[in-house]
Length: 288
Image (cartoon, rainbow, N blue to C red):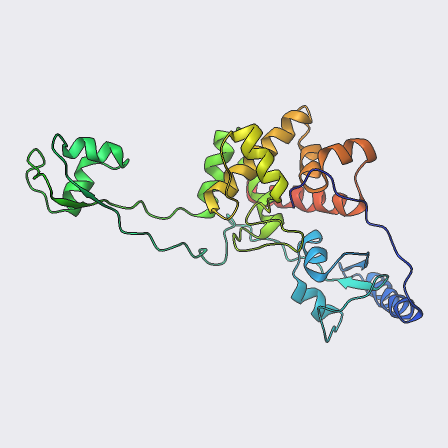
């Protein structure tokens, strides 16, 4: 989740019921560890839920609920020790979302030919080729178009999340595999994901970060609900963090999650260290 600074989570005192549940769960986790399983344990802190915990460990809320036999996944207690199942590794082949994200249906675009227009000037205006424009409208004599004729404008094919990540990684001169790993850790490349703290989309942009990136870095309005806006803002903001961290990529990744000022001033929190380790591991796999 992108943000400037996040408060350090503290542990609040839980009731006797929560302590008994935590002790029992801790015993289960210890037994699993002794048996050679790769699972780990997590002590629930104030303000956490299964979604935020799952994101920290690169797993899913459903996997944690199943591992801990939670009848009600929405009800967890402060001080409760949860068993965190080992995260499955991303595929060795070039990773991609399990299915293409749904794209909004393209709206029909038309243009009425005016005096002085040519097929070339219309094509340039809409960033298409004269040939594509002629083919779509059945025009056999491109040099002769009638004033008042309504032309259909070809709509570009929808882009994939991965191609957008690669496009803006190149534009802002950051490593594509690292950007893909960061986005995967944040949302699993899902634009529809909105966290309980209000972080939006593939790059999990917080509202204040979107405003900062738009005003200071991109110098235009950023609509975080728009897939391409979201990806460009996230990559541009990460590139900004890399510059602020004087090229220290790991510090920039930690700053993307915790807030760079907080990391520099207070050091990495425990969940930030886990987040960084996950991103670096994913980076290796996206590089293969």
